[in-house]
Length: 212
Image 1 (cartoon, one colour):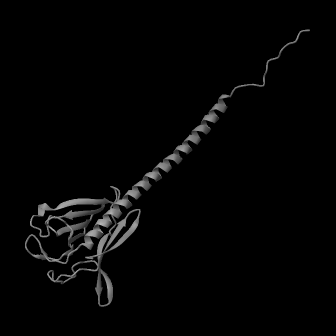
Image 2 (cartoon, helix red, strand yellow; image 1 turned 120 degrees about the vertical axis):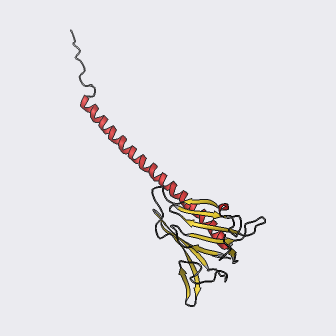
Image 3 (cartoon, one colour; image 1 turned 135 degrees about the vertical axis):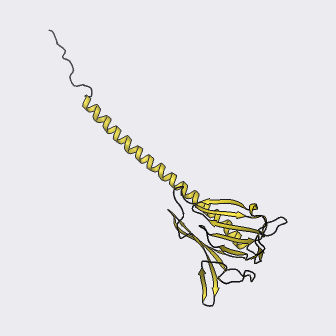
């Protein structure tokens, strides 16, 4: 008796349409995964930048607070020999410049003139070798903290303010010395408040006592 073996027809390969569908699904899943990874990396980069700016801001505020705590109430002279108060906010110009005379300089020169300026991107510190401005070129500038991106700048509300005691209590004023004050009379405000309007962080305020 002769048996005829029939071909097995239950096994077959993928069709072209099935392959195209599988490739399309894989491409979509890969795109979703890539977008998610890129979002995570971007968020991590932004977080690191913000953390670095906050660290730079904290260091800057610590140095500024130390300078203000070391302010000495002594009358000094400018390059023309005119008297200057130990602390003043220079009027005019685009940026506010807070000048002060502080102790703790070390070496033979125990006092030093220092200034802090609010710039478009952050703060910078200026140093002179002594207290009297004899040689304007001897001043050194040290940028302390860039608090914004290159395409950004600090808000218009960034400023120095002064806390003074009056007959009616404590008040904030935006100028020092007070109008019509005698530069040789001396006297210091109780505190200086730094206001920084930082894009992405909002308004940062720091109250720092003067001449402790």
